[in-house]
Length: 386
Ligand SMILES: NC(=O)c1ccc[n+]([C@@H]2O[C@H](COP(=O)([O-])OP(=O)(O)OC[C@H]3O[C@@H](n4cnc5c(N)ncnc54)[C@H](O)[C@@H]3O)[C@@H](O)[C@H]2O)c1
Image (cartoon, rainbow, N blue to C red; front, top):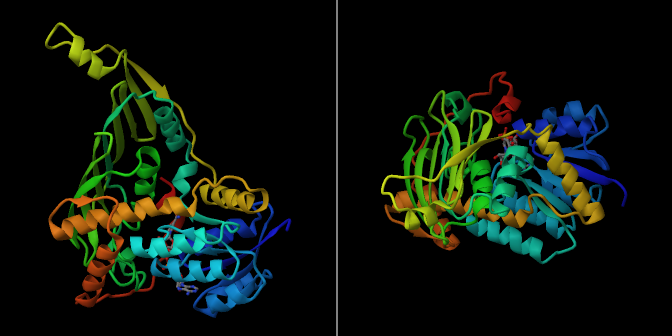
């Protein structure tokens, strides 16, 4: 196999974005040969360019005409379509989140684990952004010393009521499985886990439909504790303008701040914990020096991840975002909401079955009336140009 025959499932906001760069042949050794949407009209522009249209995803998966699929549909179907594709022998790139909740993610990952010759990857494109790659390298090189605290204020995911009304699945327990954590901030939760691993305990405080006419969370403050003793606070909102995106990681050797397109390290001359134990004066502090760490933004990050997916299939290259690593962000999103609903700490690893049961109750008891209004002419790509 020299070229991957790719099928794209889902032609909404992100599906059309994927189709755009794939048709421009921005991903080498990959040909978009089939696309599937629930409405045939959405497929006409691609069909006119020779891409075979399908309105039944299972039929496309079983057709024998594709080697791999890119799943860009609403959250719950990531598991059902992902498993169907794996069972049909296909490689799978699944949009984030890998599943709508942890128990579903476990089903999908078990299905992939039973088929080690097939590739399951997740579309976590922040992992190719140089700013996060630099932070990850600083951490793994021990430049920050022992991490003691992480704070991430993620309130620049502003969304209007028109956004929530643009799809029947959006912002419902039944259609999406969660709100700002599972959708917008899932990218940030993925990066957080990629940088610092899994916390051992979380306590979440959520506003459910605090500022929007929705039933899921649109405002979050979460406290986290890590096995190594570090603590964290994660703040998220889709209701704040202008909003803030500030990631601060404090280690014993200094403080790293990513904000407003700048990455700055204030480096302690020595280890602050050692200093506080050994300094003679009571009000003295370690000397510091300031380092500005330059970075560019990734060019076409989704295409980069697809390029890596193709290389994993054809060359056995390591995945940047293996599907199995998609578990942590789902688990964190679920655990924070679970904690908020229960009003107590939640230990990690999360009991995925317990959350699935709770989610089932939320779905069964939902009285929320979802209003759907056809979308406007927004530039969707602006939503991730940040
Ligand atoms: N990685 C990113 O940058 C990014 C950005 C936006 C959305 N997403 C993710 O992509 C997914 C889709 O989001 P969206 O904003 O494009 O949603 P959307 O509502 O705009 O599009 C989803 C599309 O999937 C179609 N669909 C549903 N079930 C289908 C099926 N069985 N077969 C074929 N088509 C089906 C719907 O008709 C709809 O057109 C979500 O998981 C979302 O979280 C990722």
